[in-house]
Length: 84
Image (cartoon, rainbow, N blue to C red; front, side):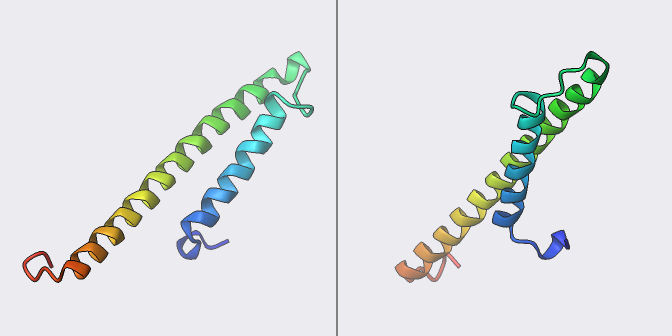
């Protein structure tokens, strides 16, 4: 998968899927219960935290991009020459 050409919404969906998988492995029916494998469960928690943080950053970037477009549309609709 080429991430440079991947739309943010698609990346966000992939991150959501990965978070769900991590949640399944840490808290759901797929939970790692063996004490010897507790280290793996801890790693899933760390991975889930990283993925959630990445998702939040993408959501923030997407919202800023949408706000920028909205501001540009408002400027164009007002016909403000000095605003451009």
